[in-house]
Structures are given as structure tokens and as C-alpha cells.
Length: 545
Image (cartoon, rainbow, N blue to C red; front, side):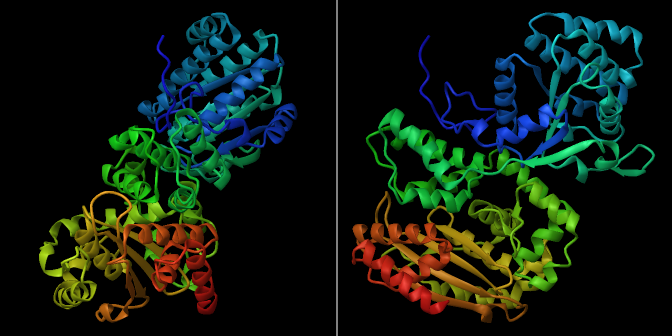
């Protein structure tokens, strides 16, 4: 069989023989997990979608099964989602999945035969509890059960499953699983379950035997580097060192985004399939833009969540740069929900989780607006292909004063309307020929926009960098709250532009935002050595802070 070259994985659990990967068992506290299992605890593992939860559970299953102490069974119960509130059908589907997976682990057809036998004897609504009882009684080792996608179940069906797991808890390990791991996006404690009679209960009340709740985190900076260097080791294709801080800033380690950028820049971009080509920062920018533009499933799921009212209550103030005092009024359950989705961090002040999401959210919220804005590029472009930003902003000022009310009324996030309208206006301008980086300064009363406009086709050429600072608390006089900090790089040669880019990446790796770094670098002679640019930029930023 032909050996498949390894690649960055963007769909489903990792398969180490074909995917670059970080060992899933290194991403969890294995010692803690084993301790909980030996203590016969039931617990929860949760994380945002496409973070690597399933890969971790599968790796843990295989690791434990090789030890010969337990039968570790993984079961994805997403199949129950189709049945929704049909309790009996969900029970049958869940038991069917567990029986099939248990037969594979045990190595005989006994678990599946037992399911068929019980379906004739037991009421479907109690089938799961009865099945686990009989199965554990029949096995020569304790059973460990890993239930993935538990939050795909809803209402009475979810409550039925949780209560059956709870009812058998006292009979472990001889007549019930020694340990059960529930895995989903949220902690089961935070579930608000609407029953068929419209009563609302919490997941904690239906599953009050949970001992711990463990959260799977993102990749670290070093793990990102390790993952990408696996590609270099396998193919010889190198990444410019300045790419790594850029990838961290764009993703902050979100596993799907990290892999998506890697796959885009090494596999989808045809010119880079020539492994002699070195990957440079401009390629990472283009890869990021393509991922956003294509709206892959991961992106689409996040976009769909923006329509939820509880998400709007949290994201809206962040986009509008509300103060810390106003932030404190956010419902805590809503904040936790949006954090569990991976959209925000729980740092103080709250912020959008990474640069790619900061880009996606305003673009999506202004998509219709962008489509309705007609711009003829010729009048605001300079002969060297740079943007005449002052001319463009004067035009926006007139447009805003004449049309703001009608346009802002169209936004779901009306509190952020002025900022979103300007960003829609600018996005329309740069589409197909530039990039916008957004930095929301919650509590600092500003939003920084970094516009990067390549002046030539290809990579490594001169780049115009424009930093806009948007002041907080502006309405009809919104444009007066725009500060054009600097315009730089319009005539710089390719090597100089590359040096400036490397300096910005280095400053980002030190903890400065993209816009802060760009603003500082834009004030320095780009022909200086990179080390000198960094030194002068640090000196300038120390003075500002």
C-alpha cells in the first residue's frame, strides 16, 4: 500500500500514522485521570468544539486497554440527537452504540448479544441502566465507560440517560462501570435542561455524583512550534522563525485553527507544495484570510452561535468597548457559556479568544452591510497602489453623517453599530487586496485597527501599514473619535518591509498586541537592522505605557 504523506488534520480525531500531532496523552493530566479512575469516580471532560477531546478519549481508551486491568469503552452518543425527546429511541440508540464498541474491546460478540436479549425483556426507558448492570456482571474486568458528545442529547432524553447513570453508581464496579467520563462542550453542571412539561432542571441535579470537571486547554506556544516542525522534519520545508509568534497571535493555540493554518499554507496553497519554498509571514496572513473567507465548518458553527441572545449579551459589550463596571453586569452563566464555546477568554477584562475570531465576528456581523456598500477603488488609491487613508476617512465621515441611523438599525449588535459600520466600510475597501487586524481594548476605551495593504503581487514586497484608533463612547459624532496614528511602509523596499514584519512578530511574541507593535514599528526607519528596530520600538512603547 502506498504510504500517505503526513498532513495537518482539520477533520475528526487524529490518526498518528497520517497526521502531524501532539500526543493527546500529554495534553491531559494523565496522573490525575488515573487517580480518579482508581478512586471509582465519575467525572466530566469538557472543551470547545474541535479542541481535541475525542482524540484524547480515544488515546486514553487505547492506553488503558493495553494495561489489561480494565475494559475501557468509548461511545459517541451523538446518534441520539436525531431522536431528540423520544426517550425510548434515544435509550435504544445509546445502548446500541455502547454494545458495538464494547464487543470490539472485549473481543467477543457477547455485549451485542446481551443488548438484543435485554431489548426483549426491558422497557426501553430503563434499557441503559439494565444493560450496564448485566454487562459489568458478565465481564472479568471492571468497565470504564467514556461517553462522548453527551451534550448532543436534550430534554427528557438527556435527563433519562443521566439519571440511569446516577442510579447505578452505588453498584460499581461489580454491577456498573467503575468509572464514567462524560465529555462535551460544557460542564454537565451548567446544563439548563428543558423538559417536555417545560420544567427546567440543571445537569447538576440529574448527575450529582460528578466528582471533578476537567477542561482540555489549547496548545501552548511550544506545542505549536513542535507541531509545525514535524512538517519541516518530514518534508524539509522550513518556516521563517517570525511565523511562530504570528501563528500564536492568530490562534492562541486553538487546535483546529492551528492545524487549519498549517494545512492551508502547506497543502492548499499550490505554490507552497514545492517544499523548497520557505514559509514566510505574508503566507500565513494569506492562509488566515482564506480560512475566514471559505467559512469552514468550524467557522460556520461559531457564526451560528452569534445569533443567540445570550451570546450577544456578552460579545456586544466587548465589541462596543464597554467599561469594566458595565462588564460586571454580564450574567455569569452567559459569560461561562460563551467561554465554553471558545469565543472569549475568562481573563479580566473579557476579550475575544484570538485574532482570527476577532476578525470573523465583525465581518460576519457586517456581511450584509459590506455587500450594500459600493466603493470605486480608483479615487482613494495612490499611484503606488497605497491607500489615501485621509481621503477615505473624509468620505466615510460624510457617509456616516448622512446614513448612520438607517445602517446601524440593521445590526443585531446595535450597541457596537458605529464601530461595526466603519469596519464594514474598511473591509469593503481592502477585500481582495489587504488585511485588517482588530484589537478590542475593553476597559481602555478604544479599538485599534491595523490595516495592511500589500503594494505589489507576490510575497515579500512592500506593505503599507495604517493604524486607526477608534475612541469609545461615540455616536453621531463617531468619526471625530477616529485617530489616524500613522501611515508607513508605502515606499519601503521588499527587504525593509520584511524586516519590519519580523520586528512586529518579535514584539507580538513579547506580549504586545499586533496593533501596538505595528504602530511602534511604523515610526522607525524600516531599513535599519531588525534588532535595532525592535530595540527602538521597545523604547518607544515603554514611553507610551
